[in-house]
Length: 59
Image (cartoon, rainbow, N blue to C red):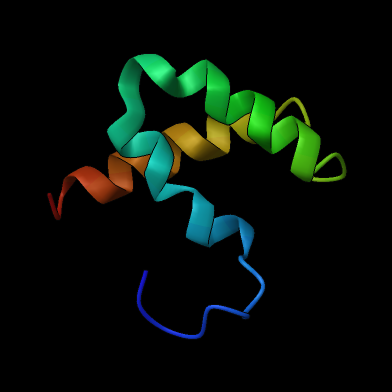
């Protein structure tokens, strides 16, 4: 990973992993739940789907 290794990862920095993991998605969801309890709401899955669709234009 380039950039400052000590910079705290934001939620958005983690999102692209979901794009590339496919069948490991559930592991990512566990990670999200553990790390971001406040962020992990019912609408989170919808937000990630929107983000994924947004990312596909550039892949």
